Amino acid sequence: MLWLRSALYMTGWALNTVLCAIACMLALPLPYKVRYRVISYWCWFGVWWLGFTCGLKGRVIGQENLPPKAAVVMSKHQSAFETMALQTMLPLTVWVVKRELLWIPFFGWGMWSLRPIALDRSQPHEASRQLIRQGKERLAQGAWIVIFPEGTRVPAGKRGHYKYGGARVACKAGVPVIPVAVNSGEFWPRNSFLKYPGEITVSIGPPISTANKSTDQVGREVETWIEAEMERISGVGPCWPAARKLTDSHSNALAG
Image (cartoon, helix red, strand yellow):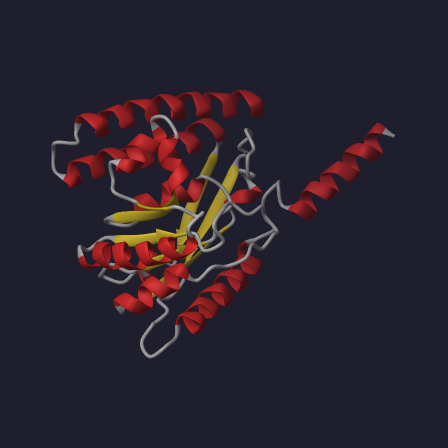
């Protein structure tokens, strides 16, 4: 049943991705906000469809911590769930992504239509300058910048190397950083086809001020808050490493 429900989710997700990408391409002559609504629908559908087909839903705590004006969001990244969920929580979002994602058929094309900050990681110095320049421009236009400081999806129970590019943009623009912790990898593991039923927690932390602080100071505060919050919300899903070991041990005992 788990395989069947996961297959049903992926079928609907893929169809929705193709249709929304085509709609975004057709809407290129139209105002930016029209294309943004199309992609926002893609995210809303993805989150709803995940709950409907797989019994995997999300809950948000700390949404009152979001300030009234655009800021930089630095989030933990464990699965594709938060890429959809964060889009539904913020009024106008710009993602910081690796350039290669834009080459993915349909998915990348739809993302490209929303003018993300797409970085070439093979040229780190130029990527850093681009992030600051475009990040400040997008914030001035009222868009929230969303970045995953670990750079990629990190398995549940693991900790990646934090990069402080998001903190640098926030310091340069004079806006706060919003830290986000999420335990999605305990239900939707990295690179896994299977999605397990349960409830993902997305925890939004209080704004971290950048006033009179260095990039490193802000980055360390963000990292400290996220990792402390991860300890609090982790260990509840079936794919948490300790739970997986316990399940495997039990299965081996029964087999023996």
